[in-house]
View 1 (tube, helix red, strand yellow):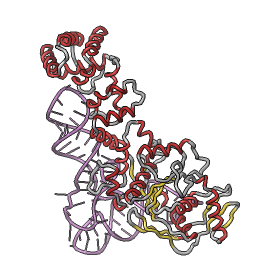
View 2 (cartoon, rainbow, N blue to C red; view 1 turned 120 degrees about the vertical axis):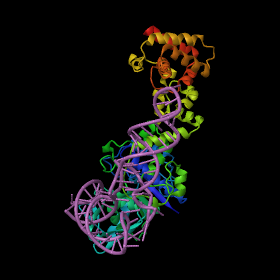
View 3 (cartoon, protein in one colour; view 1 turned 60 degrees about the horizontal axis):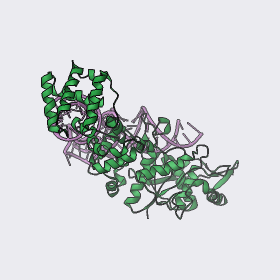
Length: 431
RNA sequence: GGCGCGUUCGUCUAGUGGCCUAGGACAUCGGGUUCUCAUCCCGAAAAUCAGGGGUUCAAAUCCCCUACGCGCCA
């Protein structure tokens, strides 16, 4: 039975690198019908941030990376929080002390390294052996004088007791893996398999961290990214679809995943491609689904219930859910007008043209029909010596205050005849 | 400093000795469609495969050295 875990430290809202690792753990577990476990490594009391615990849960929940065992869902190998397992570490550390494999040093307990020989393991990522000379390792602390275990020790004890079969983690842990292996050996335990993933790096190519201003995973949600595209994008970092596909679901990744397709070089997270991917997912969605997602996202939007007819107009125009608001504001409230917007149009007699437009609008048979509308204003454009493009842009700015909007006729249809007339009239009065 | 891991277009990557005058995707630039923007379609530019030395009839691919980056430990 495959059992993998993600073991984040609750030192802040998890950033995208943590989510990325969780994805690979999750996918590997699912691929093998195994279990995915969450364990909180909170032994660093100085950096402990209480609210990050909930943020870790929320991040995994949002992305749908559900774990089978964890602090908030339980499981037979718990507790899943290290600070609640101190007795366990103490007991195991004492075992080593009694066997003479560890010794006391100023109140702390230090592991004794067997300096002869080498330590080797076969890493799943890159499918290669990694070897360290044991003499390069130094005796290291396993239990601090305050009774807290060190990372290296607690991690191994927990992985063993929780029956972890595959340790999938960032390659910054390659250097400490020999120590871990030595602990397994000291206890006579069979070590798990290791898969050291590349790390995600920031723009300076160093490991992604909050110091880079690395965004928390949840910020991507609040910026209007879909979990599907975040997951898809993350899977493209380090892993490649055997057929070279770029857009695929996590289910598809689960079906095809193999460590042999995992790259070993560190990857830089470029948000531009994520934005493109997010747009792809938005365009692929049905109008009903997108409406629902937008309503969830725009929980506090005043016109939340009225967005359904607008959705088809914006679907091909938004990359993120948050793009909806600036693009459609004018449909729900009277725009602010700025003469500069009209100047861009290069039309000499704006006011006179607007008056003509108003006249035509008033005269047009209701309800307004797209074909009639288009014909009427193409004729008017000719009459006024304007290009069709200028004419429609003028109407666009007149009803929206903007030069960029969803298609004009459809927008006006949603706005309604009365509101449209009101806006044009208001604008003329304002001029 | 020691040890380890890495290095293919700006970015993510394909590539496991001949199909590579290195393929794809995003971004960029140009064009078409069009009432704006976007979508969509077509096209271009973009990597002397970090550098050098081997091995081989043949190397991005195997070996060695160097450089650089990153990581861990001190």
